[in-house]
Image 1: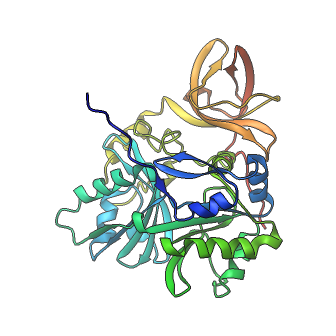
Image 2 (image 1 turned 90 degrees about the vertical axis):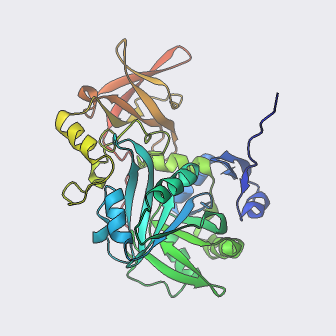
Length: 373
């Protein structure tokens, strides 16, 4: 019998830096990446109070360009891309015909007819195939740049000041979801004022050889402000506190933006159709069987994990999609899908751990909201 082996894990261009900083490494979406450097709690609180630096080189980067690109994307995405100003980004989805979510990503309009899509690592090749199959006669060129790019996310209340120490020419008017071109050591790259932590900050997308020098420069510039490198475990808790969905957990091909309470992503009024539009309109008219909720434990409790049933009395009414312990809120927290009639705030449910039940209360999302600084 022929033996089949998994493809080797991909290595970040910053791998040696993670190991020098003592990171515990692990696998994620086909990559070897840092899970934690010191402790998850310390890294989470560093981002909330000061700043943290994350390696996001595993994210996929797809370039789409050509005179037909804006209108072509309008026909494929639920967001109205023709209305997106140059130099701005928008969160969007790839949808199946039934409205199910293939992937969620940011699309940045870097030039009038040129777009950068930053997609999830696990779905990069799926996304590339999906777009390629629909090129047809459109005057659009697609380039998968994922193999030769790296990425960093600098997040936290001190992030912008640290970034300015390294890049003093950064414009003052750098708005949320804006993307600008920058240069470092003679090479050009992109900086977007976006992130996945619920804090302010920026994401940098650059040719892979720039990674180590940018990493070193940012950590050196941020040392006096408490900047520290952070791993995937902290990133997961930060996005959970901010109730930001994770593909494969809150988002999947069985759930639509409506169940995920992200119907705001869909431009219902745009004239062009898109995959899944009819299914979404029907579902919006008919109503939802289940909806995504956020919750927090009422007392000290072991954290819930993905897949745990959620109970109302003796009846299972939902399932946890993500859970963990929040150092910021000092409580076990989570998100999950629950039968819609039970999704009102302050509803009490329970989950089961080793035979013991732990009560939770449904809360408004996000569970954590940063203060204006």
